Length: 453
Picture 1 (cartoon, rainbow, N blue to C red):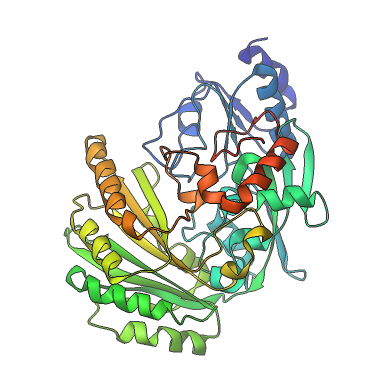
Picture 2 (tube, rainbow, N blue to C red; picture 1 turned 90 degrees about the vertical axis):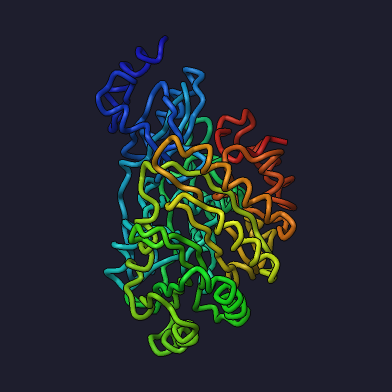
């Protein structure tokens, strides 16, 4: 049976859409957030529910098609897309159900953080989401989940209560601490290696809806002083506060460069005001937009800087210490940048997410320090060589300061060696054993792949 014949057979019972290349919606449906990724699946299964996802897995099995899974499609490496295989697309799956009394939310796998936050904000509740609101909840959570509430409430995966998983054979299992606990351990950090999360249930916390946050920006010549100040502030942050720094081009198109600090304090307004007071008082900022802000707005502050369709190439690595020499290398790297959509972000990790034992979940990113993200972004394909070259050269210049830890969600598509061994560290052997148990044929492999033991 050909793929077309299989689609014809499945279509009457499939709730969503089955798109082959001639379909007028195919070309738009195949595109992911990163415009540098231009892959053409043989078939796109746009699912509406768990039954559709299960049928799509079974179809791929029958037709011997490789599979890629798209939730939000935000992964910069383009792992949500595939050439010649089956893209299982969860984007139409947008259901969100909040239980305000129990302080939980269950959402389908195609929901974005800005969509989930909108529903929970009505009840004055939130959970750790991404630092960018247009990111999908599923991919971010399964890979870790760095977000503004992380110091107080842990990574996104630390707030995961359960997930409905479509397994490699098309069966459906619930993963939680009480049901399939070994699968639950594995999906909290193991990415898409063990199944497709058709829905996820999170613990919610009383947050805002107005918190203290926003951005303070300084001229680029002050970068050395600003980043040293940022480092010193990070040494004494309370759990309620996350602080990040960034080097970027001014958004007014002037070509001027700037350095900024972004804060998010989820405690009381009085405590938040006191916590950001030193940041607002430091130096001579060219912009001060730090103060009371709805959490949903905070979660979307960076969205405009990452437009869908822009061409992206990122590299990131962890630094346990932001030394003066590392700061100088970061500044020199950005000083050499000529493409105005590029930036460098330094995310500080501390608090609740760092107090979880490494063996507590599959995620090994449990150490305090600084995650340095080199974000190369452009719109003209003629700039691809320059954009990728700047990112790689800057990354190379920072290598003397790197710790061995890397965040799985930021890994580039062309990372060398065995990236899974790199990001999972001491958890890798156990993950390989569980991969053998739940996906012995490595059906789910277009990811940061964990090979079965």
